[in-house]
Amino acid sequence: MKKILVTGGAGFIGSHLCARLIKEGNEVICLDNLFTGSMENIACLMDNPRFSFVNHDITIPYDCEGLDEIYNLACPASPIHYQYDAIKTIKTSVQGAINMLDLAVKTGAKILQASTSEVYGDPVVHPQHESYWGNVNPIGIRSCYDEGKRCAETLFMDFHRQEKVKIKIIRIFNTYGPNMHPNDGRVVSNFVVQALQGKPITIYGTGNQTRSFQYIDDLIEGILRFMQADDNFIGPVNLGNPKEFTILELAREVVELTGSESPIIFKPLPHDDPKQRKPEISLAKQELGWEPRIQLKEGLGYIIEYFKEYLKSHTV
Ligand code: NAD
Ligand code: UDP
Image (cartoon, rainbow, N blue to C red):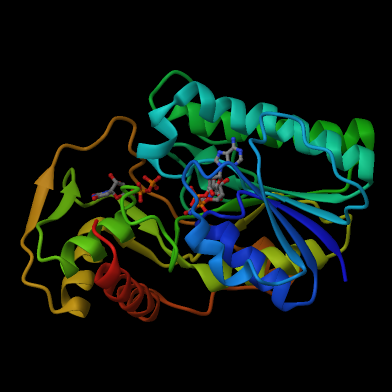
């Protein structure tokens, strides 16, 4: 049994990770300030004696004894949420990373950073391989997130070189699944909720921009395989589904699968919205024997069922 700290554990990805780590017999401390996460996401874990929740903001140092592993996921991830208080978002990525890396130095724990495909910005190299340095606007409205995450990667590498911390860096591509915040503005949750409520499906821009959508279970499997892999394999490693779709194709798929009568409407494209996004995953395949198993149609089926149930008891 390992003693594991998960920051951002009450969020979408964090709650799935906590559940899987508990299922595998570990002791899990979930650290979260509940900015975008919710107690509902971890309600099924609260009775487990190996699980504990601590309401804490990672921009403030946290002390804990005897940790084996830290998964640093705390950070708002959707544009609406990370732009709500941009300065706080950077502090969470940068000061939060320093605090968690200091804790790793003190405890000797191995630490994983949840980085993002956003470090590639609006990529001019396609698909994106880990060796690509990216095309990021340093002063735009997405920069608080993109540059914060890039700086966190730098910090992880420097703590590794200077302090010999055992690190792992993943670059997560667009991921969806149950426990996503229904109002966080991300495209999959938006389209599914809109379709189920018979409201217009809002495409930003022409809908010709692309993304590659990964189902949550595939991501969690990749994260665990990476954490268990040889300590010399530190990444960064892309974790994403390489099947690329236009946003228009996604909208049509959601309409078809829900049987919705929602019209598709077009709204202005947000600033700096990346035109394309597709992971090159040969490194993860080679080093982790990992590749996504759940394709879009199947995954959308699961999230549609989730939101159908959710909407019966929640007003969105
Ligand atoms: P989320 O918003 O659902 O979860 C983030 C969690 O972090 C929430 O529970 C929130 O309350 C918590 N949090 C935020 N600021 C905090 C702070 N200062 N102190 C403590 N807790 C704080 O988002 P998610 O989709 O689950 O993303 C989790 C991680 O994965 C994030 O770091 C995100 O950048 C990264 N990521 C996600 C995606 C994706 O498609 N979902 C893609 C790339 C990277
Ligand atoms: N998007 C859209 N309609 C929505 C929400 C998002 O067309 O209701 C677009 C958005 O402009 C972007 C893509 O879908 O081009 C993915 O957006 P999301 O916020 O989910 O992820 P990110 O842009 O961070 O990859």
